[in-house]
Structures are given as structure tokens and as C-alpha cells.
Length: 292
Image (cartoon, rainbow, N blue to C red):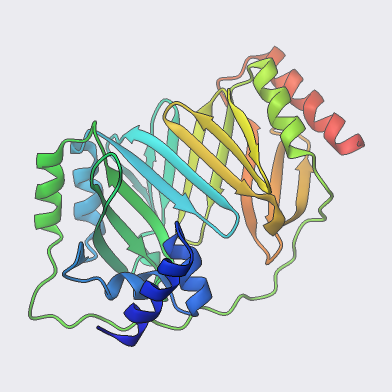
């Protein structure tokens, strides 16, 4: 057993329920580096074949697509439609969902199988060059598991090819950030839910942007975490890791939530399907937040 695997095992024994991302941070390594210690034990390295992955996604049935950044976790049940490619991006769009992928950001891929009280959780997980997680696709009850097996075969790692080592995390270059202010996000989400305004709620990292489109219903606070817990859509935001929010008015007014470390954690705006009355109500919510 490697030293890193031993340290991770000891950490999990001392901290029940510790998530792999938090364990990696405590151990000073990447999430993918921890997964690598489990190869042959519920984890397999996959080839990075983005075109093959994207071509297969529409055949998988309903899967759970997860992306996250330092503050926000965005989980959406979706049946993927055919992808469209524009320049350096691949985009999926549906009635209540859209996702934009930058293929060049993906450097490592793994198949992961984890124990769960409801059964095994099986997923394809994609990482950047440094081993930071960008996108996870879970085959759950409504997935076509035969198609998922075909995908795994398509992405099988060639035994004769040596894996690339993980790069150092890219340095964060200073960038101009919008002026931010404290935002009572919980009050805003509750108002959006009360008005039944269809919104676009997005989260992004350096490789993937994922959006839920539709009404929000169940808003739940759990300590520093503010959550949307709706059928087919979960969104979790750790407000402790935010510097605040910025509100932009104009033709498409929106709220941008900024990470304390720099960059956008999440964005909230009225959906294109909102009626004029709903868009006016959304603008009123933003105006109230800006005046408080």
C-alpha cells in the first residue's frame, strides 16, 4: 500500500463521511491523485477521448451530471441530446439544462465505482492536467447501463501506454474582478421561488459550465451551505467561500456570486422562457437586493 493511500485511509477513519475533494485538500494533493491510489479497487484509468464520450452521452438515458468549483456544487439529472461544436467549445442544450465543455481542459479520466446504501455509484470522472475535478457523470437507476458499459469499453486505457503525471496547478493570474457587496442570497432565492420565476442557475469551473433552467422550489439552509433541493436538481453553495455578489442591470439583469479566491462561483438570471411579468418581478428582486 502506498504512503498516500495509507494517509488517506487514516484520514477517512478519523473523519467519517469525509469527501474526496476535502481529503485531497487536507493531504495537499489533487483529487485525481487520490483516485489513482485506488486503481484496481473500484477505479480504472480511462483514455481521454472527448469526441467518443460526447457522441455516446445521448445514448446513456438519464444520468446525473455534476460539476463544482470551490464554493458551488451543481448536480443535474439529464438525458443528453446531440452536442454542437463551436470553435473550442462543445455544447449540450435541453429544455431545462445546458452545458458547455472546453475539451482542451480535460487531461485525465477515470471510471469510479463507490459503495452507496442504495447500491454502487458508477461514474466517469474528468480532470484537468493538475488532477482537479471538472466533470463527473453518474450512471444511476434511469441510465442505460448497457450503453454505459459500451462507453467504458470505448474509453478503455491502452495497457501499453504510460499515464501522464499530474502537472502543478496553474498559477492564478490577477484579474480585474467586479465590485462586490454582501448579498442576502437566501432571501433572493426564496423570493424567486415564491414568484415562480423560471431562472437560469449556473455554476462553472475552468473546463465546464453547467446550468439548470426552470423554477426553484425547495430552498434549504444547512449552516454555511445554501441549497436548492428539487427533483432532478441539487445545488449547494458554501457562502463562507464567497467574497460577495455583483448585480448587473440592463437587457439581461443577473446576479454574479464571486469566489473569495477570485472568479465566479455561480450566476443567477431570469430564463429566456420567463414572461415579461416574471422578468419584471426578477428585476424587482435584484433592485431590492441592490438597495439593501
